[in-house]
Length: 123
Image 1 (cartoon, rainbow, N blue to C red):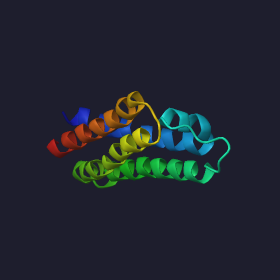
Image 2: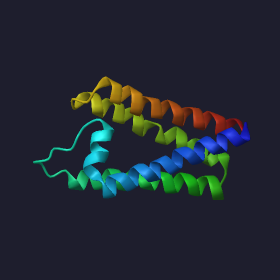
Image 3: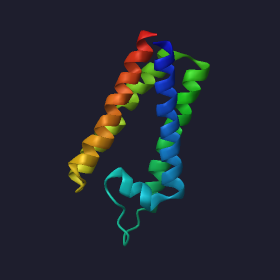
Image 4: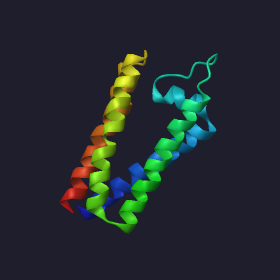
């Protein structure tokens, strides 16, 4: 169980880094993958950069907690961070995104993060 808990936590943190990178360096495709495409005529660059920085920072903090503090701190972090994909689900639904994107991407991510937190609390 320890291997599964740590592996899932590391994978989720690395995915946050990847998502952050994508929003910083490929913002338009990243926004489309999020479920709510960026408005090509609007000034959304700052918001996409903020999202990239947010997600990338979550990945770095998660990996640092796991490496330097331990599983329990990472579990609390994951429990708190699970709020982000839950709210992202609502954002996608409120802004014209599909239910498939809202639930298949964001809600599913929240569930995985909560499972990761539970596993880390157990080890």
